[in-house]
Image (cartoon, rainbow, N blue to C red; front, side, top):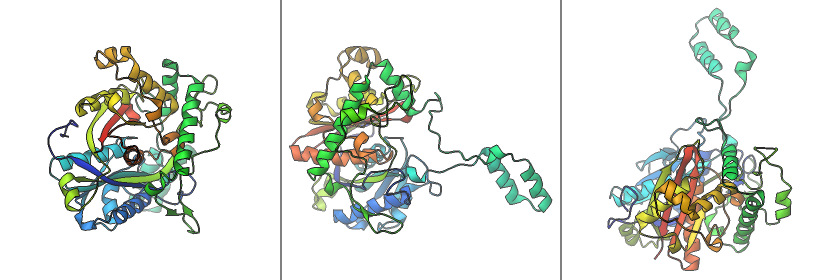
Length: 435
């Protein structure tokens, strides 16, 4: 894999191990933990479980989407707050919901280039700890107050403030270029692509059904650590608390639309919830893995990123990125034993699947004579997706890598495709292989 994401005879990047915290609904088990706290917990535990001496690591690449109120370089904090030596270099990445895919491909590139032999890549998100910003007027007044020398100066500054200036501003939820929230954009996609409410609820139902089955079969236990719940630490969070094994299509059908209350089809049931959590993977060169006696879960075969105008179909990025990643891998969609497509919204999943199979989309949007193809439902999101498992923005990609490679191993498969849609009209696709 070269630096442009294409396959080449250079050093291969192996995925050695992966781990995540439980993914929990915002405001529940992890409400007293920051993204940095969650990230440090998972990195420390991953290193400990790997059996690799901390001094062997060369780099940490870590991401966060919603900025922490006090930490701007979460990547570096993953070194400073864990057992890793402080001379391990690190950097921070952000590509919205594809953040930890970006972290992993950055690490893979560094390995391929020979700049690194062993790295940790991942991401963490705490929606419970999202920053609340002051208005610009209040912020400017506070700066002036800090410089004021007399009581009269302070009173004059305060006299300019109005009640509205004290209203807190949460992080922006709308696309700056369109003024639409991601959910409103997904609603638009559902309408443009003729995606029914019933079809969306079916995707959600399958996500919960498959995630519950995966937990009951013990498939996820080894890739999810236990986290003592603060502040009293009297109980432990050990499983994802969003999965609903008892959900039914009838129950999902009763939920009201959220973004377009009159004509909409997107509900709290067929969209991914706001989630806290962290996930990370270890990547190594083949040579380093062999020297340390490590058995890889699989390898990074190829990847691609894509972008489109957010004013069009905001979450359609996977349909543009996947053909390029597969072409770089020298493979076809039909060669994939598994496909894991991030479920931001059921409408987005169905829209991308429709584009994958569309000859018109292939010709007009991609300039390709044939469509990518259809995906066997039995190979898609086989252990559930983000609707059921949750979606801590920066952690989802690392969760997908670990979960997919472990399942690929159980099935004796060779290739898998991962896709993620992201804010800003971005898309990511990653091809993994196993030997």
